[in-house]
Length: 363
Image (cartoon, rainbow, N blue to C red; front, side):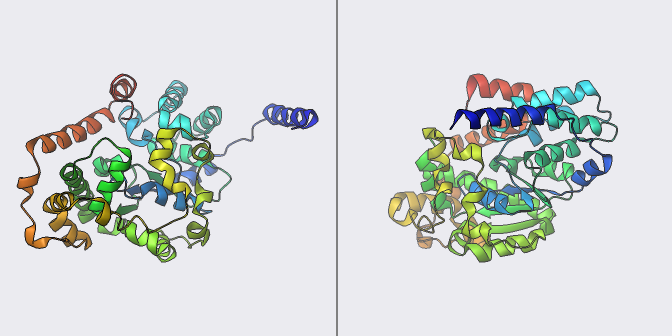
């Protein structure tokens, strides 16, 4: 880059900073508050990130990378009735302490604080969350916000209380393929353990779905990658927005710059496939990758439920055993502890940050 070009860029940046900020009207903020918040939910390694990227490609949807601040800060700020300047400042500081947010989102803290101060007389916690989403990409003509975080399956009642207008895309993937995908990136390896968690997670989502069936759309990962355009058309119809062909044809255009620039090995190992063309080659990978014992064990744990709820046929129905023969007390206890830790920690920011910093960095 030429020195003259560098100097011009510096001048433009300084000039924009020196310009007086445009006043923010109450009507503008109330319009932001009227935009529905929505969620992608599903078991980890089920295509949640791929779907988030596709949604973000839509010109009327803001679907940023996953973070946890909605639930993490709700216990501290969800019941605040009068938002003062110190409370707004504390909220902004707490928000940027969350590394998933500060590492991947592009919100300017001062701009966020300015919006919140303009609305402090009528602001609520759901509204301040929507302001955060809006400021992630204020250039869009946004009709919907989308938050994607797999562990939100633990908090569906709380999310519905915060955002009663919300709709949920439940993405589900064959439990046997889920085992293969987990083994690529995570330490958990046992087919029974993964299948048990797959079953429990989907049962949590189905429980919420039974209460509010009109709020949920079930999308199978296999359909998303093999019949992408039609699947996304159905999703858009459910959401009430027009289908955009680029969602299927140019999904990588929805990937955030902070994702594209992250070349860390661990990150690419987890999210590498989202940068590649959509393919259905992973759908039946489990048939050649898993051992017969793996398949038998997985089907004995999740097979009957998966077949009944999502039409995933068992390969060895005549050999299907009871859940108790494959799921150990240790597995049940591990799932219970993990679920309890998330539910407690995400309602206690101090504990969450302690765990993430000193105990479990991937928490």
